[in-house]
Amino acid sequence: MAKLLIIDDERAIRSTLREILEYENYDVEDIDNGIDGLEMIKKGNFDLVLCDIKMNKMDGMEVLEQAQIIKPDLPFIMISGHGTVETAIEASKKGAFDFISKPPDLNRLLITVRNGLDRGNLVTETKVLKRKASKTREILGESESISKIKETIERVAPTEARVLITGANGSGKELVARWLHEKSNRADSPLIEVNCAAIPSELIESELFGHEKGSFTSAVKQRIGKFELANGGTLFLDEIGDMSLSAQAKVLRALQEHKISRVGGEKEIEVNVRVLAATNKDLLKEIEDGNFRMDLYHRLNVINIHVPHLTERTDDIPVIAQNFLESICSDYGMPVKKINDGGMSALQALPWTGNVRELHNMIERLIILSDKVITENDVRAFANPGGGTNIGAATSAQIAGAGGSVLASSFDSFNNFQDYKDHAEREFIKFKLEKNNWNVSKTADEIDIQRSHLYSKIEKFGLKRAE
Image 1 (cartoon, rainbow, N blue to C red):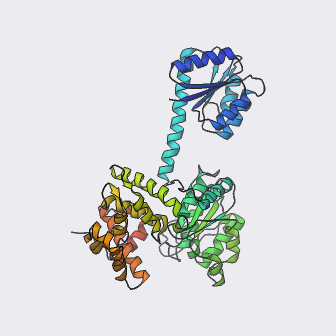
Image 2: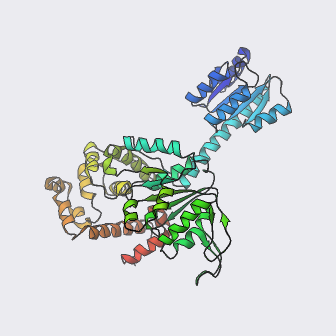
Image 3: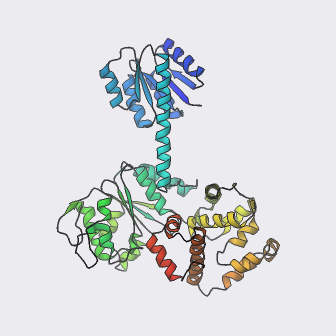
């Protein structure tokens, strides 16, 4: 049921409008002045407002302007007993959905309200779809560190300040960058992402700044770089600690002068870009080792947001795990599975070397391989993606009786940490490719890496499609 608010200083008009709208099954509240009306808008969850223009205490146009700041997508229908074309145009310019005269025509009133509600729903749906398309998920968790990150995003996003996001792989640095863009004044402009670690050092300058035709052997046509593509929007430089020193110098110049030059070109191109950067490296250590420029570090590190490791906020794991359960089961078109208390405690006790990304993969594995209720034994059995034969062959009773010895023995089969990581990565990529019938583009999108990077991994691990 849609919830409507009537703001009008005439009791008779409020009563008439309320009676008509409640008869149409709308939930209606009313108030006799704009000041209290704004307070109700701040606190209530209204779908549409009908507001008189000529009122005591605060003019209706002023109420409209203030409400646009508080809730810009809330449809306003302005009402006036002295309506003119000029008044209607002014109301429209200030953001009103429509304008009706007193006394209101019943049919016109109901049609206008219905259209206003439809428009409000379309705006909301469009934002949801845009968020889904841009992969912007909620930042989940209520721990002190996550609450501080959310608060910092709210404060920093509307400014033009550059932000350096630090944290381990898989902790959610990209998600923080997406929300900084989403809540900024540049949200309607593009967010362009560059993974500096995935691009060979000899191509990074061309990727960032573009190149002119013939500037090097394979430059068969002009290419627009990421800085130009992000003009008016946000450029996110992920894993900036892996950028070459020559590219760093050019990025520094772009930040200082707001100008770039394409590789092989002489023309200077002005760019209006907000730069966000992320790294899993200690940049101060990289500066000491001569791998990163100190002047660029200070340019980027205006605001620092550190994303903590998942093991530093284990109280958030139940919330994140439940969200993953619901979204993954929805994607698979199956009933949402449950994790019992023992299973959740087992999840919270794991080391999570891959952070939130590893938790997502773990939940997906548990959904596929476990029964309706995910238990502690399931978590122990499937915690190691490389332990397929030994763990898969062990029964729940064996795992429970062994007290985790099956898991330990599977770890023991690896000589060092890198061997284990490679094995786990190989099995994960293989599983995803087979799940997507070896559709490389779809798999790359799903696991959130570039397609060229996925091809490199397939070649590295010698993966082949089954005949």
